[in-house]
Amino acid sequence: MKTQITQGLIISLIFLFGSLFALRQNNHSLAEDTIYSGDSDRIAAVKAFAKVALNYAQDNFRDSPTPLFVDGLSVEDYKPVTWVHEGEKWIPSNLANQQNFFRTLVGLSELTGDDSYSSAAQSAMEYGFKNLQHENGLIYWGGHRFLDLSTGKAVGEGYRHEFKFTLPFYEWMYEVDSSSTLTFIRAFWNAHILDWGKLDMNRHGHYEDELGELWNHQFEGADPFFEGDGLTFINAGTDLIYAGLMLYHFTGEKGALDWSLKLAKQYVNARHPETKLGVYQYSKPVRRDTPPNEGPLPTTSNYGDRAENQFSADFGEVAKEGYILRNPASIYGNNAIVQLQMAEQLGKEGKELLEWTIEGLLAWAKYGYDAEKNLAKPILADGTDLTGYTIKRDGYFGKRGQRFQADESPMILFWSFALAYRLSGDERLWQTMRAMGKGHGLGDLGEVPGKLLQIEFGTAQSDPLAIFALMEIIQSNPSKAYKELAESIGDNILEHRYVNNLFVPSEDHLYASLSAVEPLALVSLEAMLRGEADKVPRYNGGSGYFHGPHDDYGRTTDKAVLWSAQRE
Image (cartoon, rainbow, N blue to C red):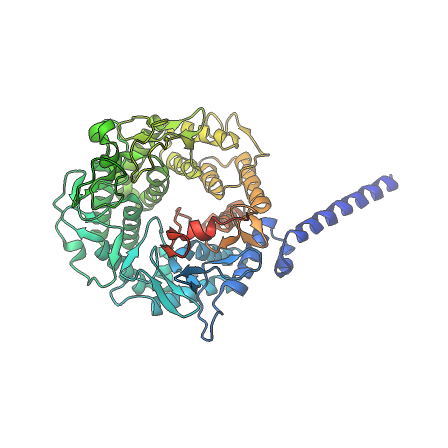
């Protein structure tokens, strides 16, 4: 018996040390003092990531460093990413691109008791408020503007302030500097609303705009798809809705609530009257120039509605930019999640917002989703399936000869439907989400929550958004199986997306964004498993970006140049 026990002990020790050696081999030496601290491997990995960020990404790139961070690092050697324009290399620090990074740091401090993480985030944001906030309240950040850490100068297209599903960490910003946060939100609305009477708005705002009457304007209304000077894209509109509702949350300003709901209702009013599908935008651009009758169509908005130009010959009146639903993630993913979260926060005042959002999700599930194949179909808002349609003229929506195809339903919809189900209990939402779970390799989540489960615990899925979806399901039904599935996805993130203490979409990616969602998902998962979910800032689906000219690429985005770059 003693010999059997000794042999068993030796085997166990061999297995243990082998596992520790393998883990050590997969992590950079900088993190070795955090890996074996008693935390789970997942939270230890996030601590190692944060340590690398604080050591290598914080500004030390010139004689007068700041508390700011570069947007990302090279996976191989931790050098800062660069943006190249006219031969000049810039080191981009865009506070709007780092909001998820700050959420991760704040959550990590809450879970570990180590304030160094949140302090670093706070110092960066304080510097931004003090040095990067225009006198009118807007900040030099967002889609067309960042600070170059090699020179200390703001660069980019200076007059343009732009957000598209950026969705900043406002509740924390308010804690850092309440006055500057409120000033920004008011300036944000002031700069982006072009005509308050009909809520014509635009993704671009001007830094020089002075604060006007704001909530004291009169709203007259306008029919859907009125011709306007702006482009009322839902990605930009969602940021305004979110900012306005957060302002109401902070101050109780009734005007901020009323105008935010008015803006959300504009998208609802423009939905197709029969299907309730749509819309990506509720206006259409003024036609200032006439498109040619033949050949390639111009793609700029001065030629009017670009879908009408390209597709009206085949589809008639339904051919509108707002009615082209090729990618459901914007309307039924990002926008839905924000509106559902804010509806929950508002309580009774958010009742209509909740109803509008669920109506839209159910419409898409009926017309746009292939549940058997987990496919999102390209559709028009009248329900027309565009799968297989061949484009006949070059234009904004594609080249001549290109065929529309159905794609895998994006994971963010799995999350939005899970959240919508938790808030409403509508069985139709559960069944749609159940089909998505199967399609994403998670197994059968149950005929009803927690019942008749056939979970695929060996799933290869590593998308961090799946963790946020499962956390919503767990709030509906705290089944141990759902928690174990979430842990499996977290472990897959470490196996497939954690490289040299940084988080990337795959092992082949060259650059890592500090604002990657993976570490935030892991911190959120850890907090939930500890029963302390409220300690980690709630993710809302936001992400930053930069869009501008880059040598050898033309006008492009940081996602294309940096975050999608892979080994050849």
